[in-house]
Length: 60
Image (cartoon, rainbow, N blue to C red; front, side):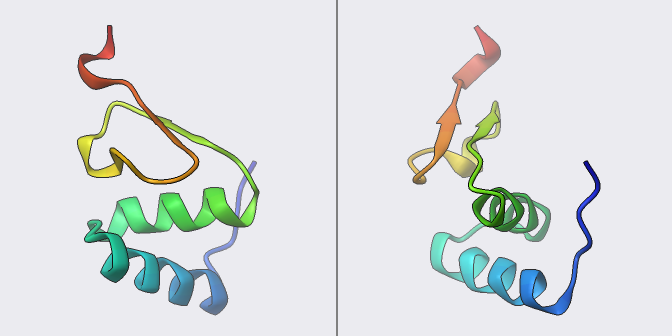
């Protein structure tokens, strides 16, 4: 699925990035997942502890 990074999504990403101290790309990923009501599955430690995120340290 391709999602357009429109102004609303960019603003939401910026707000989430500031609130959770996420790098820009991670904040866009997180905002996109929240808009789609999806979970983020990641090895990225930046997401650890966030709601609707499944963080898997070290990848097993």
